[in-house]
Image (cartoon, rainbow, N blue to C red):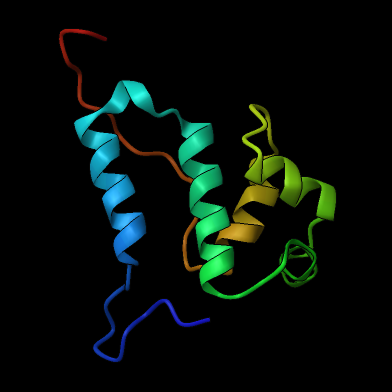
Length: 102
């Protein structure tokens, strides 16, 4: 599972990068659930893991992996981070900038 290139920089697959860009261009089409679930599913497939293998490697239950990939609206962040850590990522606090529509 390599997510860091030989020059030490994080490698983000083109498909994931396009989803991230689309999120910023069309924020109303996405929400945290769909983006997170798509990211986890895409990374799992990129690393050629089944849901069972992902649950075993991350130490969370298979049911949790399935619920995460299906976009369940309430999830335990510690378990989400257990999965994301396998891909070199984590959920954390990100400062927001105020806009007129918020």
